[in-house]
Image (tube, rainbow, N blue to C red; front, side):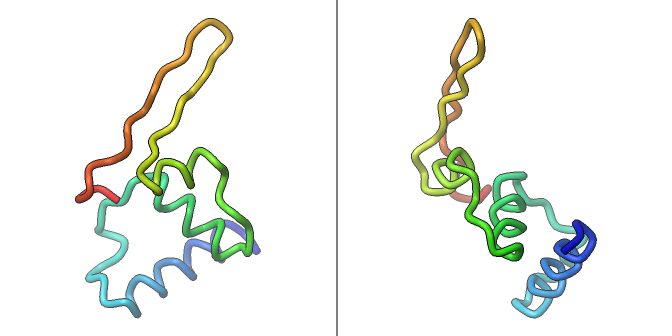
Length: 76
């Protein structure tokens, strides 16, 4: 599947689920990533799953690490 195929499938699914004007809605990147992985038949990456499960994530760089808290309930 191409990215275009996945996005068209997601928009159609949202519209069928009664999300008004899906292309005009605001979603977090984590929710889009999760849905595109699902539509492609793949598991979401661990950091996306952790964020959506409410566990937050830790990003570790070469010389630092930072925590990203889980999103507010109205942003998932």
